[in-house]
Length: 136
Image (cartoon, rainbow, N blue to C red):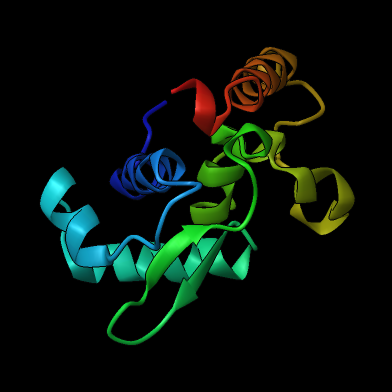
């Protein structure tokens, strides 16, 4: 399993905002310069994170971004899930798989790996949920 560039950069972006939690708004150009991430990519990430309610923004001359919640309340799982809603190891680990009988895997009835993949997937998610932005 790999963390995508988007997931990694979203964590970096959110960590930057967490360091400035009680201060002024942070501009995307500042985040871009300090972390060597393109502004265009940061804008895409900011849209997704804002849509999920993790950041707020203000436009204009003194505009920028800041966390909508305390850094102690935002986990790596929150950030990663905000930018990649389908990050399961296999299809049978996906939440909608068990709800959608039409999407049943052809090997589900005899698959020897299914339970292991689901356990591993859950452990990864639990580990991501155990780390907050303030702990980075």
